[in-house]
Length: 195
Image 1 (tube, one colour):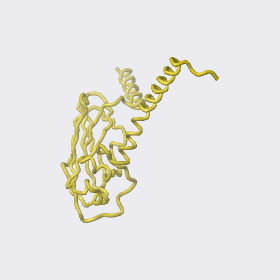
Image 2: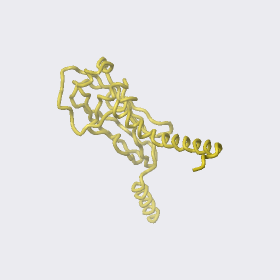
Image 3: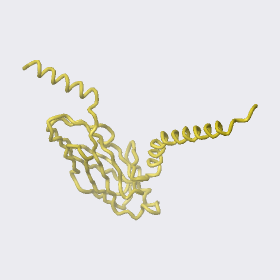
Image 4: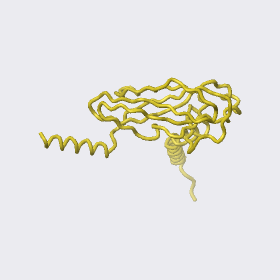
């Protein structure tokens, strides 16, 4: 077998590097998401099927924060500023969203907790952030989130000193789902045929 020409070998190596880097770029988002969920890095929270089996006497305050992505026309705020609960105890909080426009708007919420190290111990049981929200013109809704702080936080060398955790949500406008857009188009067609 004849050895490769040095120019062809260099071109082949450069191509392999480009393919490898492209693969890393493609995999970086799911790998980063997995890393954050496993470690709580960046304030990523956990999802639980049910509340904690252990409740201890130590309490922690959970503060609530709300913001909107630039250009999102909703009004969005927490209905309470904070709650105090025992570690492992299930908490329930509500956020309020209002669509002051004359059109339906769909949104999705991103979230995190601070301090970041506490994300590993903050578990949501149910949350409005798990699905898209659609608000009709002038509609105001209350959206619940149920959660608990895992008592294992007391064993973490950094997070165990946290006296409070802040749960933050940011709503982002998204395209109306096809079903909602189809219903809206049908309503417009019906009201147009009546005129």
